Length: 204
Image 1 (cartoon, helix red, strand yellow):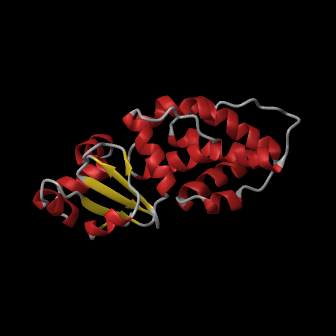
Image 2 (cartoon, one colour):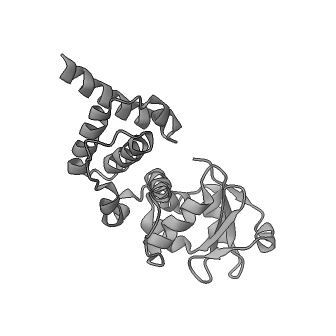
């Protein structure tokens, strides 16, 4: 993760999404998105942010020394702005969670990065349920299965993970490309290897 302080004066020139009114932190996420939020809220939902703000790191020092009416700006250039906005809205209770699958996939990958996965379990369980249609071997269906496999793994939903991994095994499609497209490539390769081992075991 790459986080850094940036000049808070730059925040006034861009539209800011307010998660918490009068928040003392502005997250500059990706190239364009700015989100105003309370540091106490971030520390409550994420051990990563808690460590960042409670430690002697530059972000923590800036927060402790800031003036009352001037939020500090934390730059998160590697993250997806839309996904961060949705994630914070969901956990703040300001979002109805009616997202497309790809949007939720991006949200849960980001949640895993910041240690918020446990808090998303309630919202995420419905997104890994699927009808295992034996007649459907379409490439897009295979992609959906792969993404749901990743989500069920991150959510520790063992029942869904078993069903989806078996479905991917029966589809007999290559999943290496999807594995390498994940932000966490090691996780992607681990899951891809598990699918291939399942196929090998059943072909013996």
